[in-house]
Length: 390
Ligand code: FEO
Image (cartoon, rainbow, N blue to C red; front, side, top):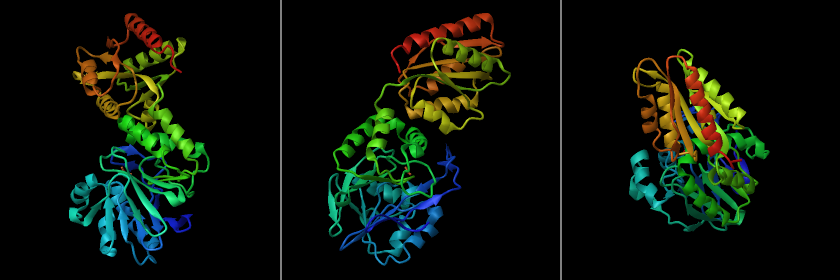
């Protein structure tokens, strides 16, 4: 992919990674991703906003082949998929000044080996003139690291947002074609990366709204030429009440837990409560966390392995807890052979949930009529708690 013009004098110099399927050795990337870097030229200075993942170094060097000088290397975020080539960029352009938040300074030293004194810290709201073009820095901590900032170019009404508003979506298109084009990927990205920081993100949305922005250029995925659309989507994910939806991460070893899940799904449906079971031994974790953005209730369903939950539910509980979704209710159901503490273990693992724990339902061996009646009772309780949710 060649350099692509966003505005006269402002170009995308990123890399599309069609084949990447896993990020952080955790996050599935069904649609690949991109690492967007941008070259911003003023009359007097040229700035490079972020770099690309080190695996795509050759792509960045091809983009910069005829760029004789970079005066400012802006490191908006120290995570290596954007900053990993910063040391190599500085080796190639030794005159370049590194601009980053004060918080990023030590992190750049720690993670990239660039001495802290090489970094010029920029304050929130500080501006740097490139000559006829301004970089206006907006601190945005916890998107999803503590050091992040956005970069606004007022003359072009252009906002570079790093991970914020990004999507893991490899595309030949630089711009979002339609809202639907990017909606699922952007939601997946929000869920996986930013959901734990929803309150902070809410504040950042307000900051962005105070700027006059025509184009949002994130560091992953397509560029948004309709900022209102992606801002409205974030509003929904961040602010709105959870939906009338029960998420059921489960696994089953000999069928008992699966029978309980099937019964609960049907009982909930009878009471007007939609649910989404995810077999955690085969499901895409990303698909699960997308639904986690909206669900009002999470019911963990696990067989008992020795005395604890199945390891796949250990992962589900820990992940759910870490992502701090807005679910208001939670429960544990499942089966055991002779004894167990699966429910207590799941509740401890998912302690990051700000949810009311509803009574657990467990069967010793096969679910009995009594078990199924208890599940009906759980469905009654969930339906009652969900009243008023859309
Ligand atoms: Fe795309 Fe947090 O790095």
